Each structure stands twice: as C-alpha cells, then as structure tokens.
Image (tube, rainbow, N blue to C red; front, top):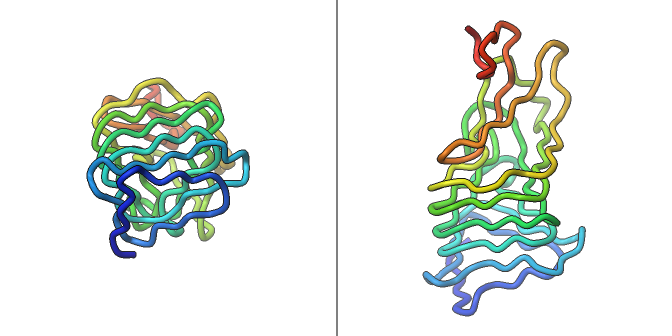
Amino acid sequence: SGTANFPGGLNVNGGRDVLNGGNLGPPGCGIYMANMGSGGTFCGTGHVANYVSHNYGILAPGHSPGALSIGGRYDQGANATLQIELGGKKPGTEYDQLVVAENADVAGTLDVSFWDGYAPAGGERFDVILSGSVTNAFSATNLPALTPGLEWLVFYRTNGVQLRVKSPTDSDGDGLAD
C-alpha cells in the first residue's frame, strides 16, 4: 500500500499479486505479465509508474470495485484477460476502471461481471478504460446477461473503451434513449 520500486520492472509469472492503493515506481518501472498461463492475476488499486505489458493471465483493476492507473501504455495480448466488475454508475468506486495515460492496445478478452447484485438500466454507460488513445479491439467479450429487452454495446472511442446498455427506445444505435 506504499511505494514499491522495481527499477528493472516487475515480472508477474503466476499466482496473485495485489496492489492495495499503493504505487509501483520509479518512472521506467513497468509490469510484465508473461508466461502466466490461466492462473496468474494482477489486481488492485493504485498507480503503476510506467507501463503494463499483459500477455497472459488476468489484470483485474479494483478491490470490488476500484481503479488502477498506468502512467504509460497498456499492451494487452491475445492470451490475456481484462476483468471488470460493475456494481453501480460511479467509476472507481462502484465499477472497475483502468486509467491509462498513453495508448491502450487491446486484444484478448474483456470479461465483465456484476458485483453485489447490480443490474444496470437502459442507457447506462461505463468507461471501463480511459486512455490517451486506443488501438485494436478485444477479440472476445464476456458480458453478463441483462434484463430482457436490453443489450450490450461496446464502443471503442478515441479516449477509451465504453460499455453501454442499449435503451429499448434507442433508434440511432448509440445505446441512449432517443
């Protein structure tokens, strides 16, 4: 929960590593999530000073829920999963959010679940990634079931990735009530 300095970067190769509101630094320090298979997880809240290279395993911002910020870029490979919990409308306190200062290059899986019995209404939006820019798209999205008549929309915006619950009165495809 304080500051941990890994001048050569932190290699996460399995198990579960938790950041509890602290900082990984100094500038130049990054996290490498490689060769983790399906069992490794990096989760929590706080700040990573530079970048995250996420090739395998799970990155899970928050502590049901919460926000994780990255001072550089985020690169998610084809074998990696970003895990997000939704429990309300407020980012970082009611739903998980990944905040990336530079580019978020996404691939692999976006895995979303509801937290604490939450069920979103039509027209609600969730900025699950805020970033300087976004390249590519998730190859798979695992989204929880919604109330009948509602459906998920995934928007890749210039400054992040947003989930929307399509309103039944949406006629122009933006997910919002018209």
